[in-house]
Length: 369
Image (cartoon, rainbow, N blue to C red):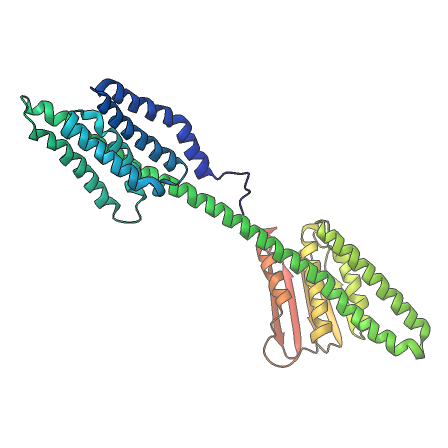
């Protein structure tokens, strides 16, 4: 959402137009009144036309032209009729030549037709001056027909790309706002995923250890007490990690995740074999640690595993477990999210199920490192 204190670019540009052009519009209109009015009536009528032009312009800069378009157009047409048919003042077209081009491009449809109608109206009203006696036909056609029609047509033509320019500016502003909203949504999804990684994993482990402590409380109180201490430590660590996440300080350590996974598998009676081909690159360690954590949770939750094999390479990790449930490949939302994260960082995540085994592999290809 836009901050109320921060005007959008469209509004700022219109305000700039108001500051720069309003004095010019006012001065031009005042000049027509001062030099062409032959009576106080002429001055009042031409002044009314100038007022209509100024009102329309100010409303246009505020994006509220629609509210005053009709009355300003009516006044502008009336002033031009008075100037052409009554006062013989050719500059009376000033208001219609200004208000009309502001209004026409903002119509919802038939704008081209409206532009033709506007120019034709200015031409016809100006040609009405020919109904009066005249000595020089060209002296009437030029100031009352050709100049008003030409100026109105040119200004109207210029206002169409001007309207398009403001539309583009508005589209860019909306695109920027949408991009900001998408960034917020992506960050929320990332935060939710990280929170799931922290608390979902820990809560599942706490559930397993609590069950184990319940079985041992009578047969082996010392071991049960040790399990409870570990549960307490896990909860305390989860609280700490959640705080770190809230302040964007959390970073996974692959070695710590590997040790944690081994302990969890062994506590659940699952044999673990770890093979390190080489040291893992520091840049890949965090994402690979997330893959290991999510896979560990999935194995403990969904599989009846008896053994797990973990292989670490320079920029990859492979986890293979037996005891995979029969049937189609299950939908694992956590791994789906991690697949997107790895893809965004140039890596790839693959999962496959075959002959009762489940294989999860994450790697950063050589060309992306």
